[in-house]
View 1 (tube, one colour):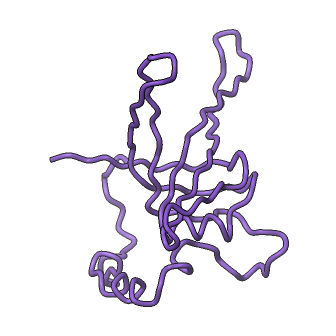
View 2: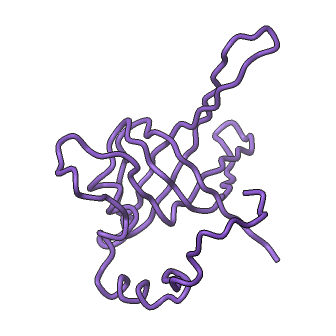
Length: 154
């Protein structure tokens, strides 16, 4: 069994750049920053920031184009993909991107109604929303949502 899954929460470094490789196939590229804070041996508070390159296709790219902006806090779910190419100097280079499958905005936009939730699903066509509604794994039964504590470590 194999699994290639990435989940990140971070802030956009800039507004996504969207290009159309065909009239109906957009691709969005942007980066997000994730930060980790820790105490050093000397007791100083340190923060380390990691930048992640994100690529989104089709409906997800349209969502990025319409709703994402610099500095927004977002949840990204996708997979790792490594690209390889030969540079002009003859050196082989590699880049690892996250190909986003799902993007959610985690904070309210000041210019919009506070009751509006922004998520990628609002941009997907009606047919795809209907398929998602029929998925048995997204609709859990009430008896599974009990308040019983389990012993799982997460």
